[in-house]
Length: 137
Image 1 (tube, helix red, strand yellow):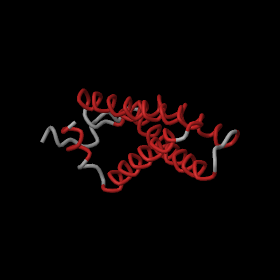
Image 2 (cartoon, helix red, strand yellow):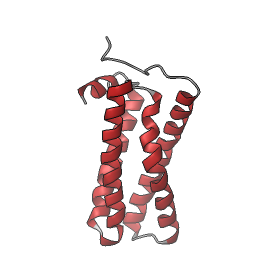
Image 3 (tube, one colour):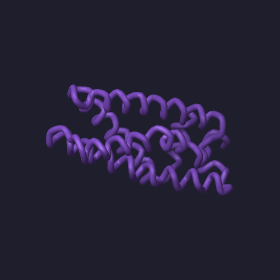
Image 4 (cartoon, one colour):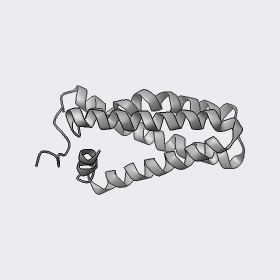
């Protein structure tokens, strides 16, 4: 984890801020969803997805470094979450406060996935070199 943190600190500042924003949104929305009975399963799914993606990204980073492929775990887990959130917001929304929380979460995940799909595509197309590497210097 220290190696990942060191590499993450070498990313452009806007990327670091974006990663922090994602973390804040996901943690706060997960806690909010866990608090309410009719959104609890969504909270559990988000909690599992946060743990899964964190563990997967840390493991992948330890194997390959800070490469564009790291976003694949987000794609695998968050694409179905986005579909579920979209359907839930449109067809069976909870109260107004939770609707706003769902929209903020949904828009954050969609933006994140756009970056992830683009990065994974670039990796598949041959951009395999580490983005940054503090661990090799």
